[in-house]
Amino acid sequence: MKTSKLSFGLFVAPCLIAFLLVVIIPTFSGILMSFTDWNGIDANPNFVGLTNYVKAFTDDMVTTKFLTVEFQMPRFINVFLFTAEFAIVSVILINAIGFGLALLVTRGLKGSNILRSVFFIPNLIGGLILGFLWQFIFTKVFNHIGDTYGIEFLKGWLSTTGTGFWGLVIVLSWQMSGYMMIIYIAAIQNIPSSLFEAADLDGANFILKLKNIIVPLVAQASTVGLFLTLSNAFKLFDQNLALTNGGPYLSTQMLALNIYRTAFVMQDFGQGQAKAVIFLIAVSAITLTQMSISKKKEVEF
Image 1 (spheres, rainbow, N blue to C red):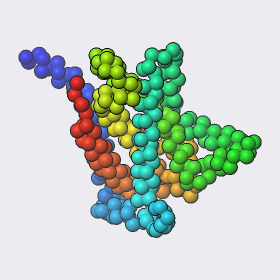
Image 2: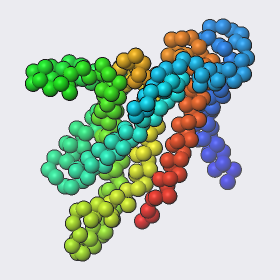
Image 3: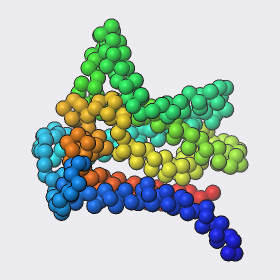
Image 4: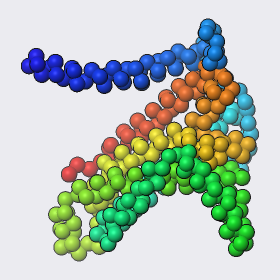
């Protein structure tokens, strides 16, 4: 028993030490930094209390538009709302496309294995490369097609807030749908074949099987898929930097890029850390709520 406990401790200790050094200590250091006016250089920053948190919600007012109503709000809140809107649209699209692709490649079609590889490849490309690649497509290829065939819709992509928003959604959906496909494939292939055989004997068509067997029994995979896409959408940084760089007029700037610029461009690490702490709390609350709701809808089999 003593040997077993010693072996367990030796195996677990390196992971715990690494987690402590890489996650726990930097997290608490960041929280402490958020209560100072550290500029990244000064060796003796001053304690400023909650000033950085207050400034995040009051400084840099910008005009924003909700439906048809324009009003003033702090840029950080505006950035948060833009990121939340982007996350909602992206989560729905990525999971719907990933689930659709999983259904397609599990139908026993010829070339399914090749299709799985093709759909998964975008996930292997780095975010910065992906951003620059799609920037060329949106600004050059789309514009050329628009000029050649007189399609106004394809002209001027990334030059407005709307096209910038949908450009980011398209890039993230293209990158993550293949990854979600793998998760949904594992869930679909884990469904007992006896259920499909019983449905065939009852004369059920594909729609009925999808509604009554597949969708309920992939709920566990949906929980994981929603969590991953939600957290990745909120944390999006490199694609945002490469594709739009927050433009035009910072209207497509997302939370991670806003925090980076506050800390490393404006040299205000205190306020940058305060925004990061707010970001951490908000994303944790949203993802835990999503996990709790999704767990209640899971079906055991």
